[in-house]
Image: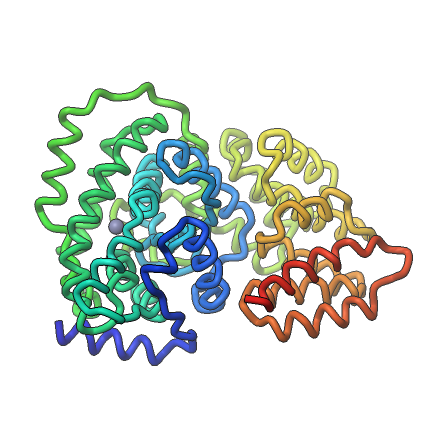
Length: 455
Ligand SMILES: [Zn+2]
């Protein structure tokens, strides 16, 4: 326990994250939980190491949506975050926020296994573990506040279960108490998660495979990972699950969102640049894909394009393949190919942000200066998607349209909880906004910002 606490202090001091205190009362209603979760996200967003990758977020949110109906989550919105950390971890924060490290793709070889991780996290949300844990810890030590800086430290120090426990316990005196609850919660999340996994048409045995991956990691644990030893998986967690799986009648399987070839390619993209020798199942065949991506990153766009064309059509014609085709084709000036791929993706997934961002990048490459209408519409529908504002910022800089740049920066600042900076950028955007241009985007921004300023 002493080791846990000193590790915690070290990591806390390394993060300039405001300690957003949390009480059970704030989480007592679903609305309160969502408001708290969004405030937490704004406070910690900058420290999470987010990947600005619309395709990764679209796929993650599609997976989450597919599972969501099998829980009692009501109208709670789900926010998916793709994170850069190479360590195996995923977490659920109050209010439907699910973060996934790209490190999980080193170890998970099937979509069903990723779904098992997500199913477990969603179960923490549907069973209201944050609220129940916090309420229990307040009973033990009245008036104690957990701090969410602790949660961020836990996430950053690669401890999935610790994140869950710290959000419940937080203060030193309560950590051991929170941990004893968390073991029950872990089992409950496995049990609820496995039923949802089955109902969503995935092989529920995937949950057992994930626990096995974690058990193997735990046995190979280094000293730096000692933190994890205070949050054991527990042999009972695995055997409990296995006995349930034995009795479970299998639901009708449904095709995955990404087929096997697609998932293999998605994995290659996610683990680019990571040390593949750490992978649990060394089943990667990513070399030729990584070479193509390397050429692209070094701005050797024709080489990247040719390398991509040499990949089998069955690889290129996957969803992940479409995303890569768009990126490579735009830079190699293969505009018609890019346009076709964007249209295909729009037909398959009309609500995705990926093709909308791609339309903007294509417009830019073709020398357009007008904002594509589809892009503006998407910013109205999904203003919470940071990638849209980053894309607008890129477009504004390249076309020297200051008003768009200030608008994008205002949203970016707002989403990082920097309300004063957001206000400044909004004022600048107003000053620069052309008279002939529809000013409704500024009104929407004003509304969102003033609502946050009032809180
Ligand atoms: Zn858990």
